[in-house]
Length: 372
Image (cartoon, rainbow, N blue to C red):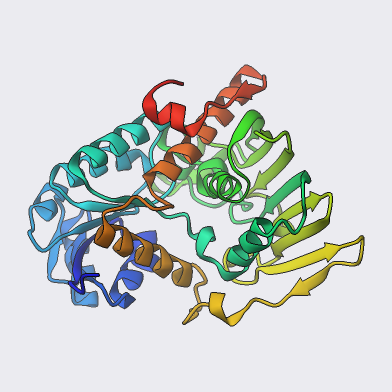
């Protein structure tokens, strides 16, 4: 394995500044060499604060820098498609935030371009790298529950419960806003990772807060077109029913819980931490109809270092996966291929809600080949 440091350009200074930037600075194989912001003075201020060499407001200019190997994109999703194409056309690898694009056809086009350019594109699906989730995966792989009978997901938080929270792109469906893109993208990915592909989908999308104040127009109320509540019923290829309940407007919601009921046993993974969606997960297991008992997380799965912001430790593991993929020139999960499947399921969720019907889900392989 090469020990060469990989130069990183950070594009997006919200979540990008909070998580992407420190993670790439902490990883031993990556170095942040450039920062992008549409306002040049802001880019320069961040570069000065974090001792970053280049600060630019033009992505083409950043991608022309020979010391940039990776472009890390955490801008709003309606900007991802064009930005990813620019990066790939300059032969850069990409770490792309979810939701990856506005629709699955954009994502598939990015995948095909990455394949043509022989570049790695990885998606930030960090639940795959949280110790409690990795232990759950091991239990499932060891057939702990046997044949599954029911899978239930509740992800009920209040992050957008305050109707006075400002209107922005997140409030607009056409710009990739809403709870489905923010957290449903994660749920679809880990369902695929843990249980396999999905046969059918039926969905309801709701918006409990239809207006929010826009700070750029003297706090005048503007319409919210993005969802804040999602009720989704899935059927796995093996016939197992999956119920997914998502909400970002539930005061004192129960947090994030995954329940798996099978012929041999039950597994429950969850966290009631409403302020940090990574810290606090615990795994509970039961067999022979005995009470659920908490399972200790083994040291081999634990994070080497934890941070006040729980998102940082698993994101560093995402960065590590990206570096390994680049070293070996492989699209190991969670690559853009997994991002395509998550985006496909989000698109079908919207279509099911609009058409008020249950829809068949094409296989990932068929969709990659254009046979959907």
